[in-house]
Length: 121
Image (cartoon, rainbow, N blue to C red):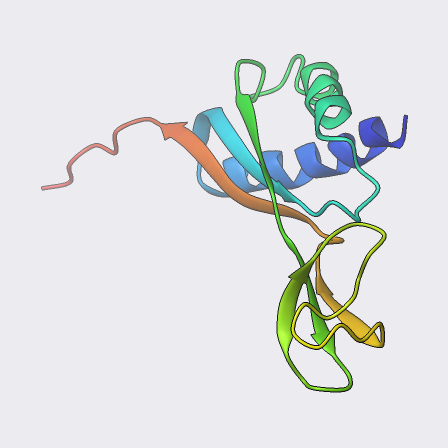
C-alpha cells in the first residue's frame, strides 16, 4: 500500500505547516487527487488514520476532492476534459493530446486551531 508512505510524507508537510503557525492542533486537511495519480482515495484516508496517530493531527479529518482529467489537443489546440483510458480531444476527436491535469496529489488546505494571541499594550 504505497498510500501509507505518501500519507506519511503528507503528514510531514501538514505538521511543518502546523509548527510554523504555532498551532495547537490540526482540524482538517483537504487533498486534491487526480484519477490518473494511481492513488485510491479510500486507501489514502485509511492511511491517514494510521499516520496521524500521536500527532497534532490525531483528531483531524481528511477531505478528498477528485480533480478532472484535462488534455490539450496537439491538432486543434483545444483544452478539454477527458476520461481514464480515453485521453482524446472532446472537440475534434484526435488522440494526439497532452495531459494537462489529472495525475496530481495536492495538499490544498490545512485548517489549524491556534491559541488566541495575547494583546500587547
